[in-house]
Amino acid sequence: MTLVCGHIYVVWCSYARPQPKEKLYVCFCDQRSLFFFINTKAALLAEAQVALAAADHPALTHDCFLDLSQAVTFPPQHLAAAQDRGPISADLTRRVRTALEAGIKTLPKQHLAWALQTLVVA
Image (cartoon, rainbow, N blue to C red; front, side):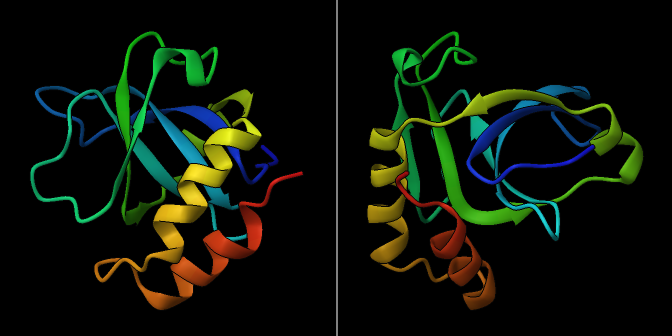
């Protein structure tokens, strides 16, 4: 599968709780298959989150949160089955960039740099 930065993907998450399931993620580094994940509820320990409304993207069925405090990746077999749900909007990209530009202590500097380099308003 060819990943596209700034797109939302449905990916099988083997570590989801209470049981493994498909979850939504935003790709920010296609070369290294890195994603930010979307949670239904605000993460208590996440340093940086962006509130998402269901209207922000057709793949969202309810209000939720984009967690920018850490990056995730997946085994090749999970990426091969990932489903591309299309790009995030320019407005959402701006909101994400604003949060990233404020700095995120828990996100490695290189990940932050890649996200700022690839998540751009078209």
